[in-house]
Image (cartoon, rainbow, N blue to C red; front, top):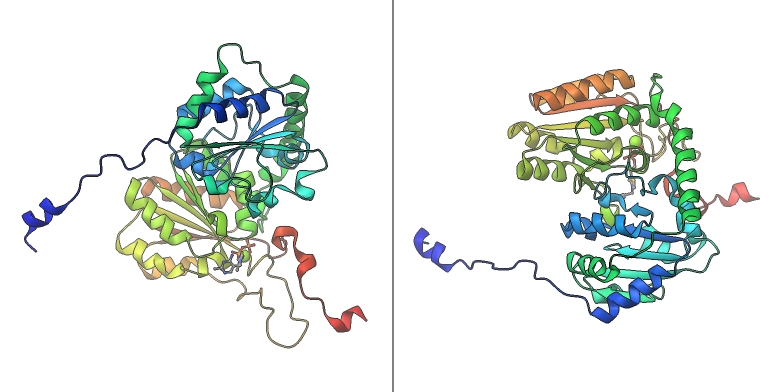
Amino acid sequence: MDAAAGEKSLVKVIDAAPAQLPAPSAVKRALDVLKNAKRPLIILGKGAAYAQADEAIKNFVEKSGVPFLPMSMAKGLLPDLHPQCAGAARSTVLKEADVVMLIGARLNWLLSHGKGKTWGEAPKKFIQVDIEPKEMDSNVEIVAPVVGDIGSCVSAFLDAMGASWSAAPSDWLATVAKKRDDNVAKMAPKLMSNASPMDYHGALGALRTIITERPDTIFVNEGANTLDLARGVVDMHKPRKRLDVGTWGVMGIGMGYSIAAAVETGLPVLAVEGDSAFGFSGMEVETICRYNLPICVVIFNNDGIYRGTDVNSAGEDPATTVFVKGSRYDKMMEAFGGVGVNATSPDELKRAVNAALDSGKPTLINAVIDPAAGSESGRIGNLNPQSVLKKK
Ligand SMILES: Cc1ncc(C[n+]2csc(CCOP(=O)(O)OP(=O)(O)O)c2C)c(N)n1
Ligand SMILES: [Mg+2]
């Protein structure tokens, strides 16, 4: 095709994300519920991060005075170290809240469908703010649905709250703050451990410091323990810097995400990968080297899935969760001309990651994690098939 004719055929998109204003009555209904709450909670989902209405969301959360919980990819929308962040008191706030406002978050399996043990005994009222009307009432009753784009909805809340909105009850804020501070204090010594072989907390403590010092780094994350623990430990300070497996928990996204993020943003990428998770798309290290991308891959190598110490109770073969012991993933990167490092302590890990982010050279760090350090994730071990013989 002739280039000029091709260009002429292109349509200019005038408004890729048209505003969708919420109904004033829906805004009022939601604020009435929120105003009367004794133990309110706001849950920010990745929809709130995608909306790119960061200022309005921050103003609304701060004006409301309500504790907030970020879902995984909403981390950093407001900084994880914000005084209202209840991330470190997650189980307490989910159980005890009486009114929960979901902003761009859905009551899917990640939030136990809004019912059951996770949500405790106290009766709950849900307010849901979402662009998609079909999300309303999907698993439990939503007493105050607000349908519209998140920027418009949150701005409408701010307007309707007026000048005399009173902050959430102080006894609730004190309860949440105390729980959060206790949990943070309990975790602190584990994150400072420089023990070798490393456990997850020691290694993540080092990475947490790096992200605090380099808040613009894109943080990519997949695995089981590697995912669950990094989500809790590594604070995010800016919006849309964390990319992970999202709603479906699909392994194999890490390298593709890293490459796309590096190409699109030009920013350095730190990908923290379980050894199994990495294996789903590990060959992309060749792509990373071919395009000389500023990506540092850290593999939490615990010799397998959850734990590298499992044995096969049924025969001679290795257990299905166990990989070749002592593998050296760093050699894969060297094979394509990138930098490979084998790190056995948090100090070594920290030095190697800082060097990689400074140089921008494709780097893969094989972080040797104690194979006994992890656990089966998801607390669903009770669903595992049990041996009939064992039961007898
Ligand atoms: C495509 C796909 N296949 C399988 C799974 C099931 N799964 C969940 S986590 C995981 C790997 C966990 O091992 P690893 O990445 O080594 O993390 P670790 O717990 O050892 O740190 C697997 C296979 C999945 N989520 N997605
Ligand atoms: Mg593993």
